[in-house]
Image 1 (cartoon, rainbow, N blue to C red):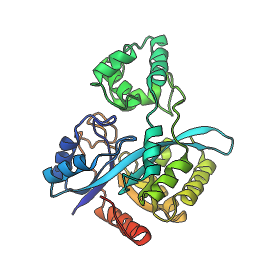
Image 2 (cartoon, rainbow, N blue to C red):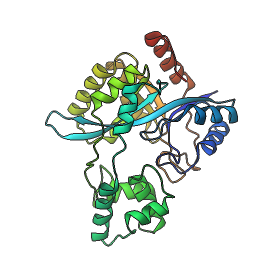
Image 3 (cartoon, helix red, strand yellow):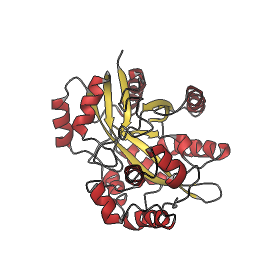
Image 4 (cartoon, one colour):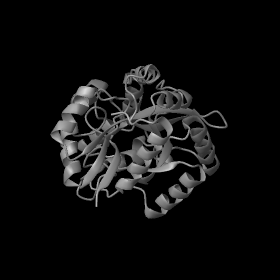
Length: 301
């Protein structure tokens, strides 16, 4: 039985492992289809070619997790994540979205660090966090969470989000995102022009009630077009949650997608042994690819 994982992260954003290490983990886990979907990062043809040469038994897919903003019915500005797969990386509209989605994160991260300091939960300055995280291109909450674990304030990354910095839970040091990401309309328009697959990521991560979830799904489907899906199989979701998401996907004619959202062994989306072994069916990806061929007549590498 082969498997698919269409949502993973490496050191190119906020993951702990190199792409090569993640590829090796995927092979050991029986994965056939693997998408590297680092935040607002598009792998160069040379990077993907090298990985494909290293792992000929894997089908390595071009991917990216795009950040964007969605306006709710009451005009709240909510950050939404869209996984793009098999898109044309040279598409000018897509390149424009990626350029926009590289804001200076210093102010946002510093505000979180200052709120933590005010609580007596000091993990240092922005520069300290950069050094702790080995100078990533995308410094954010996942790195803060790991630092909180390393400093002994919490035991797990999930606990750091639940108590301090997550969208849900106690939110003791939560800061509303001020980053100027592209609007959802621009991201989905760019993915269509790049002839890619658009997937709505982790629906339950957004601070939306049931009515607003349905509004988002209607908006997403209308903007994404026929080559679109939503994550049904997801790392930490229960069987009950997956059944609910499957029903929503069917209701809005969105193909189910599957992704661990793996960042590293301390991530709540890792398996019990800290690995990449979620057994998502390979057929999920094959249906997405078939839809892409049907809509665009091409699957971009």
